Every structure is written in C-alpha cells, then in structure tokens.
Length: 223
Figure 1 (tube, rainbow, N blue to C red):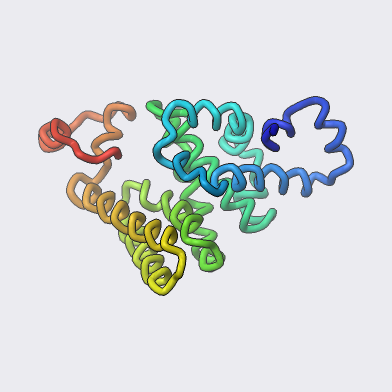
Figure 2: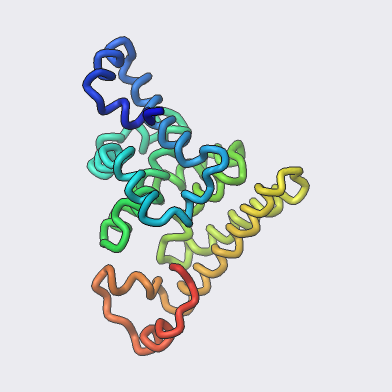
C-alpha cells in the first residue's frame, strides 16, 4: 500500500488532486504525517527504528520536511490550518529532522520553529485534548531546548501529564507519561549542570569544557 505522502508526489495522483481544494490537499498532507508517526503498533519508529526508519522517513516525507524548513507551510505554523496541522509541523521539524539529518547540524537548525509552534499549541490549551502519546511529542521541543526556562516548563508539563494519566485505564499512556517525565528530568539536569547538551558539541562544532570532556568519557545517555 503506497503511503499518502508518497502518492501526493506522483504525477498520476496530481490529476486526482485537481478535484480537491488547496485546503483539502494540505489537510491530507498533515494527516499523512500524523497517521505515519502514530500508526498503531509502530512505536518502535519513535526511538528504536535506526537507519531503516531514517531512510523510510526521508523517502516518504523528505519533500515535506524541506518545505516546512523553507517556510512553505506557514499556514501550519501560524495555526491557520488548525491545531492538527500545527502539530504535524512540530513532528516534521522536531522529530523527522532528527531522523533525516542524523549526525549533522540540520538535526537542530530549525528547532526554534518547532518550539514556537509547540508553545502556541500549549498556550491555546489544545494540548489537553491530545492523548498521552501526542502530548509526549508535543512537549519534546521544550525538552530539546538549551534554556533553563524551557527545561522547567518541560518538566512541569510532563508532571502534569503523569497526573492526568494516573487514573487512566490505558497502561501504555501511563508508561508514556512516566517515561516522558523521566527523560525531561534527565535533560533538565544536563542544562542545569552544563548550560547545554554536551553530546551536541561535536556536531555543532562547540569545544568541550574540561568538565564535559571528562564526563563524556563515560556518558550513559543517548542525548
């Protein structure tokens, strides 16, 4: 079965698309992102997919990622196409960029865009309507930010998520919330200690401090 994002790029599908409005086409595009990332039974894609998933995301969504980076999805960024489109933008920039540009500066170069959109969805309260898995990923741009303020906000949001899930019958959502809070605290610890994420230094061309150099010899975290 051909994935929708790939179909949208095919000439034969272009003819079919002529019957849709621009708004409908944008909706199909952003829904393709969310359907892929949150496909039931495919959570391994999130953090354990490796090179295979990286290649798959590049094939299916590479064009969309570049358009998002180039500002062609401004209507997603400013929420004009709705909260779901804005959330899809966050996934494209914050998550898919980390897959497609793994090991390069482009992993992080557009993080501020993802953060700005995530904060809009948090500030307008729409995040409260999301399930635990989606909230987990909505908060990641804050967790990925190298500022004390965003780290504190990240921990607070994941703490709220744990509280919201405590009476849930969905054990996966409970686990997701707990893992989210644990990772948020680990990220916060690094920012409070170093003021940045030392593991990014090599990729970003930053020189390690003496403390970072020593600690990186026995680094236990994947980030």
